Amino acid sequence: MAWSNWSGSVTAAAQIARPQSEDELAMLIRSAHRLRVAGAGHSFMPLCESDELIVSLDDLAGAIHVAADRQSARIPAGWSIRRLTAALWEEGLALANQGDVNPQSLAGAMATGTHGTGTDLGSLSTFARGFRLVGANGEAHWCDADTNADLYQAQRLSLGLFGIATEIEVAVVPAFHLAERIEKRRWSEIRESYDELAQQHRHIEFWFFPHSDHVIVKTLDLCDPCDPPPSTTDMDEATFRRILDIAARLPFLTPFLQRAMMKSGIAGRRRGPAYSIFPSDRTLRFEEMEYEMPRAAGLDALDEVVGWIRRKRLPVTFPFEYRVVAADDIWMSPMNAGPVAAISMHQYAKMPWAGLFAGAETIFRGAGGRPHWAKRHTLNRADVAALYPMAGRYTAVRRAADPAGKFLNPHLEALFA
Ligand SMILES: Cc1cc2nc3c(=O)[nH]c(=O)nc-3n(C[C@H](O)[C@H](O)[C@H](O)COP(=O)(O)OP(=O)(O)OC[C@H]3O[C@@H](n4cnc5c(N)ncnc54)[C@H](O)[C@@H]3O)c2cc1C
Image (cartoon, rainbow, N blue to C red; front, side, top):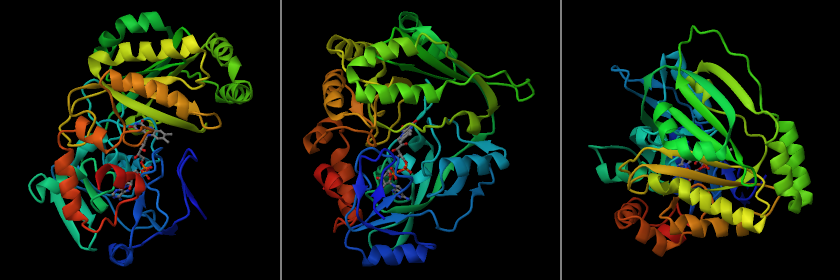
């Protein structure tokens, strides 16, 4: 059966291998000409694409080991965020932050700099303390800040270029509970108060349908587990699906449909263990581009893109998502120049997206943005070199780790070979 990513925009006719042990994995790597490792296939870019071999770690045996000081845990790299956060909870532990969904593998999420939202919270890659990797020659080795330090620095956001991670040491925190609040607010009001709100809440994000004057704001804050559960009102996904299907047939109706939809009341309250409150279900398939903007430039860039969409009455059917991520020091991280505002642009998977993303990408690039590596972008090798001072060192480490280019595919070869 052909491999496909989550959105259906990347397919591959490769053979799929599911090794059950590290020895089997090593044998596969030794005998392969070229291969890619895939996690849950949630990347929109063709990172996992291969016409030869795709390796899945779904069947690889492994267990979680919590360090004696309870500040970190070694976790099988192919475990999903869902599985590992449930296992950590049993140990009284948690990840300090998570993204929107949790089916991604730990290794896949870290390999692309996957992040959640929070003024002072970094991406999942910043939680990585060390990696056990099976390299291009089939040998397993460990890397961390002291051992194989350059390999570790590159591997923190690796795009799967340096070997196949089988175990990752991850920073963890004591388990905590979160209260979620979702509400509809006027865009003008949020535009004014966003920076203040971002300081007030542990996590904040908003969704912005570009043809509406309202946004949907979601906050998450620490709460007392003994508080009674709040009454909840769910957002109506069935209605949204119907609206998207009408827009797919009659795109010119998009502005009208969006304004009508945002007239309805939208509110939600939940409370519970953090690992169960962070993720949402995403059943409607979309394609996505995301740019990480210097924090101070984020809201202006969003205004500019939304203004362009409104002027041209473009059928952008999904909302923009606006989040904040802390700065880091990871070689290929779009957060390594300072704190960012992450702006995600989505389009219903049944509708054209490439032209719309291209127009917005020009605006985001013009305002100093750098793309999320897993989401649609059109960077070329010269762009990568210009945007990332450490790109040369990253590429040199890649060449040393994989001289024959076993872990390359056409997309990655064009950027990093
Ligand atoms: C519905 C949805 C919601 C999302 N929400 C967010 C979000 O909130 N925040 C955010 O930042 N991103 C988000 N993303 C993007 C997603 O987190 C990334 O695409 C992530 O990389 C997906 O993890 P995966 O396990 O599916 O990896 P894949 O897409 O399968 O692979 C990604 C990369 O990881 C490499 N890789 C996988 N396993 C290994 C391994 N064992 N060793 C070495 N390399 C490996 C692959 O080779 C590839 O280069 C979302 C995507 C979708 C579809």
